[in-house]
Image 1: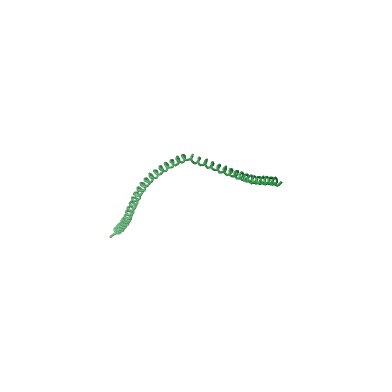
Image 2: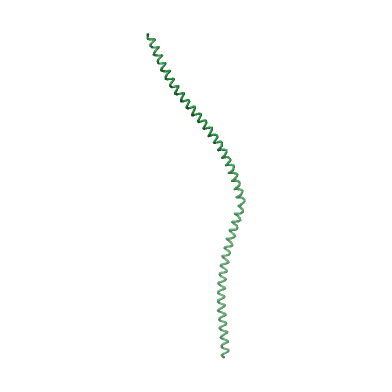
Length: 145
Protein backbone atom coordinates (compact mmCIF):
# COMPACT_ATOMS: atom_id res chain seq x y z
CA UNK A 1 0.00 0.00 0.00
CA UNK A 2 1.24 3.22 -0.96
CA UNK A 3 1.20 6.49 0.79
CA UNK A 4 -1.62 7.70 -1.42
CA UNK A 5 -3.75 4.68 -0.48
CA UNK A 6 -3.21 5.25 3.24
CA UNK A 7 -4.13 8.93 2.82
CA UNK A 8 -7.29 7.88 0.98
CA UNK A 9 -8.24 5.45 3.80
CA UNK A 10 -7.63 8.18 6.43
CA UNK A 11 -9.69 10.63 4.41
CA UNK A 12 -12.45 8.04 4.01
CA UNK A 13 -12.44 7.33 7.78
CA UNK A 14 -12.52 11.06 8.53
CA UNK A 15 -15.39 11.41 6.12
CA UNK A 16 -17.27 8.52 7.82
CA UNK A 17 -16.68 10.08 11.27
CA UNK A 18 -17.89 13.41 9.92
CA UNK A 19 -21.01 11.80 8.39
CA UNK A 20 -21.76 9.93 11.66
CA UNK A 21 -21.33 13.17 13.64
CA UNK A 22 -23.58 15.07 11.18
CA UNK A 23 -26.23 12.31 11.31
CA UNK A 24 -26.33 12.52 15.11
CA UNK A 25 -26.51 16.33 15.03
CA UNK A 26 -29.20 16.31 12.36
CA UNK A 27 -31.15 13.70 14.32
CA UNK A 28 -31.08 15.89 17.41
CA UNK A 29 -31.96 18.97 15.36
CA UNK A 30 -34.87 17.01 13.85
CA UNK A 31 -36.15 16.08 17.33
CA UNK A 32 -35.77 19.67 18.49
CA UNK A 33 -37.63 20.93 15.43
CA UNK A 34 -40.43 18.44 16.11
CA UNK A 35 -40.68 19.65 19.71
CA UNK A 36 -40.68 23.26 18.52
CA UNK A 37 -43.43 22.42 16.01
CA UNK A 38 -45.47 20.75 18.77
CA UNK A 39 -44.95 23.75 21.03
CA UNK A 40 -45.88 26.18 18.26
CA UNK A 41 -49.00 24.13 17.46
CA UNK A 42 -50.02 24.12 21.14
CA UNK A 43 -49.30 27.84 21.37
CA UNK A 44 -51.43 28.51 18.28
CA UNK A 45 -54.24 26.39 19.71
CA UNK A 46 -54.02 28.21 23.02
CA UNK A 47 -53.96 31.57 21.25
CA UNK A 48 -57.05 30.58 19.24
CA UNK A 49 -58.89 29.55 22.43
CA UNK A 50 -57.82 32.72 24.21
CA UNK A 51 -58.87 34.83 21.25
CA UNK A 52 -62.31 33.22 21.23
CA UNK A 53 -62.59 33.64 25.02
CA UNK A 54 -61.51 37.27 24.81
CA UNK A 55 -64.01 37.90 21.99
CA UNK A 56 -66.79 36.33 24.06
CA UNK A 57 -65.70 38.30 27.13
CA UNK A 58 -65.65 41.52 25.11
CA UNK A 59 -69.18 40.87 23.90
CA UNK A 60 -70.35 40.22 27.45
CA UNK A 61 -68.57 43.33 28.75
CA UNK A 62 -70.13 45.38 25.98
CA UNK A 63 -73.55 44.02 26.92
CA UNK A 64 -72.93 44.88 30.58
CA UNK A 65 -71.83 48.38 29.65
CA UNK A 66 -74.98 48.89 27.58
CA UNK A 67 -77.13 47.64 30.48
CA UNK A 68 -75.15 49.80 32.93
CA UNK A 69 -75.67 52.89 30.77
CA UNK A 70 -79.37 52.12 30.45
CA UNK A 71 -79.65 51.66 34.22
CA UNK A 72 -77.73 54.88 34.87
CA UNK A 73 -80.01 56.81 32.50
CA UNK A 74 -83.05 55.30 34.24
CA UNK A 75 -81.70 56.30 37.66
CA UNK A 76 -80.90 59.82 36.46
CA UNK A 77 -84.45 60.16 35.13
CA UNK A 78 -85.93 58.98 38.42
CA UNK A 79 -83.69 61.32 40.41
CA UNK A 80 -84.89 64.20 38.25
CA UNK A 81 -88.45 63.11 38.99
CA UNK A 82 -87.97 63.10 42.76
CA UNK A 83 -85.94 66.33 42.94
CA UNK A 84 -89.15 68.38 43.48
CA UNK A 85 -90.03 66.00 46.33
CA UNK A 86 -86.77 66.80 48.11
CA UNK A 87 -87.39 70.49 47.53
CA UNK A 88 -90.89 70.14 49.00
CA UNK A 89 -89.54 68.20 51.99
CA UNK A 90 -86.94 70.93 52.58
CA UNK A 91 -89.68 73.59 52.40
CA UNK A 92 -91.87 71.56 54.77
CA UNK A 93 -88.96 71.15 57.15
CA UNK A 94 -88.42 74.92 57.17
CA UNK A 95 -92.15 75.46 57.76
CA UNK A 96 -92.17 73.02 60.67
CA UNK A 97 -89.10 74.74 62.12
CA UNK A 98 -90.83 78.12 61.80
CA UNK A 99 -93.97 76.69 63.41
CA UNK A 100 -91.92 75.33 66.32
CA UNK A 101 -90.27 78.70 66.82
CA UNK A 102 -93.64 80.46 66.73
CA UNK A 103 -95.11 77.91 69.16
CA UNK A 104 -92.25 78.44 71.60
CA UNK A 105 -92.69 82.20 71.39
CA UNK A 106 -96.44 81.85 71.91
CA UNK A 107 -95.93 79.49 74.84
CA UNK A 108 -93.54 81.99 76.38
CA UNK A 109 -96.06 84.79 75.94
CA UNK A 110 -98.92 82.67 77.30
CA UNK A 111 -96.71 81.74 80.26
CA UNK A 112 -96.03 85.43 80.88
CA UNK A 113 -99.74 86.28 80.55
CA UNK A 114 -100.70 83.48 82.93
CA UNK A 115 -98.12 84.74 85.48
CA UNK A 116 -99.58 88.22 85.15
CA UNK A 117 -103.08 86.78 85.37
CA UNK A 118 -102.11 84.88 88.50
CA UNK A 119 -100.67 88.05 90.01
CA UNK A 120 -103.83 89.94 89.07
CA UNK A 121 -105.96 87.17 90.52
CA UNK A 122 -104.05 87.28 93.81
CA UNK A 123 -104.29 91.06 93.84
CA UNK A 124 -108.02 90.80 93.13
CA UNK A 125 -108.55 88.34 95.98
CA UNK A 126 -106.57 90.52 98.36
CA UNK A 127 -108.62 93.52 97.24
CA UNK A 128 -111.90 91.60 97.63
CA UNK A 129 -110.90 90.38 101.08
CA UNK A 130 -109.94 93.91 102.07
CA UNK A 131 -113.26 95.25 100.77
CA UNK A 132 -115.17 92.63 102.74
CA UNK A 133 -113.14 93.40 105.82
CA UNK A 134 -113.94 97.12 105.60
CA UNK A 135 -117.58 96.46 104.73
CA UNK A 136 -117.92 94.06 107.63
CA UNK A 137 -116.25 96.57 109.85
CA UNK A 138 -118.65 99.34 108.80
CA UNK A 139 -121.58 97.07 109.39
CA UNK A 140 -120.27 96.10 112.80
CA UNK A 141 -119.67 99.72 113.84
CA UNK A 142 -123.17 100.80 112.69
CA UNK A 143 -124.85 98.10 114.66
CA UNK A 144 -122.86 98.90 117.76
CA UNK A 145 -123.42 102.52 117.63
